Image (cartoon, rainbow, N blue to C red):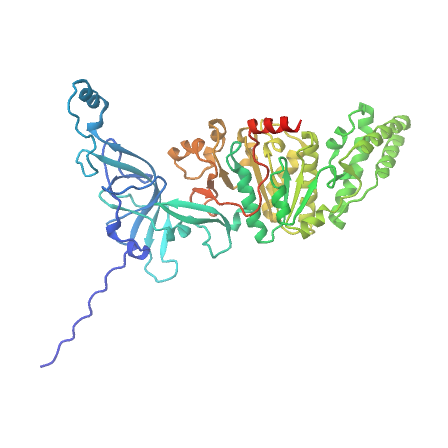
Length: 531
């Protein structure tokens, strides 16, 4: 008798849950529908929470589908518990009639207790047919989530691919960790955030300076030079620890008079009359042009102040105003000799930026006008030198940025220079980090250009300014930002850098922090002991 070959058994269809390592028995709930808690949509899906499960706010989850190779993913953004026995009127009646109260919530299995949470739908996952490394296709929601589908916590191992963040063994900036489902996952920012600029926003005492210290630690690991403008001295200890250069404006950091710009130079000589201003302006424009050309060609500036005096005499002579020119020179000379900031040559700080990990310029002791001068001149020098490839790519960190980039239509030469640095920085491989406690006081156009926003706790007025730049962050999460704890920040960026905003717990620093905010009682007691 001839035997008949047995056909091979059909291979079981691969499922997305199995590929992600999700066991069906680990379901935390079921998508639901009601007139009160809503129904699944392309943006959100409510789900009934299984008894004995305690899903945490912010947990990333999967929503199953009738199609085994597809699922939606999202995160829990709000929830509620319904219990008619806990209605205030019923509880009041029990007390008023002195009735033996029934326990409103005898257990989670009580038929009258219902817990419902809401999922913000972030996207859709689909298992590809091929067997390549990137077997899961991630895209925006295209299929409507279904009711009656099991909900699972998303494994932390899947989050880096979903968020588009580096894994711990890949190049990235290790900022801290995110929490999901009671688990912690190291969070790394992609290196692409640097040349596309970052805004660090938060009220006083919420962790902005600490975060910037973490960023400095991470960036110096990759030997990317940093230049920082420091108002409160927060980066002084870290710079010393990293063997960088701490410079004090007016002492070991000074600015060539020839590159600060006409308006700033004239502000340094407040005693000039209108006639003086006309002559000095024309003469200074010539010197300024020479200084910028010198920067481009030689990488440095060293124009003696006598060159400006000679140019003033020349302009005055051409206009038949020799006596006026002489008086103007005397006033300019007096102001220049009194100045602690202005010098003739560029100095060694540019070389420090090449050879040291960080150059931190302390300007806290200066009036705001002089701070503007330092920032404007430094930004102008750095931009010119970088465009001419006389400097490596670098990061520019600006503390209290609202002072230098004010809103309300106010524009200074410093504002214009900083805007230009930010606008062209991406093409020149220059990154800018702006730190501010007052986004509402800052230039809105500049904030918009910063692709990455690190948002700590903010007051409601400041939150209004940035709430529209937080990607797909839902309103319930935005509403909780003013109450966020110190050291926690929401990080949002362009979708090609970070697919979804995330709540990050910033890690501890390895470098020392700046001086903490003093406690008034102890500070007064210490003062009295010393005096």
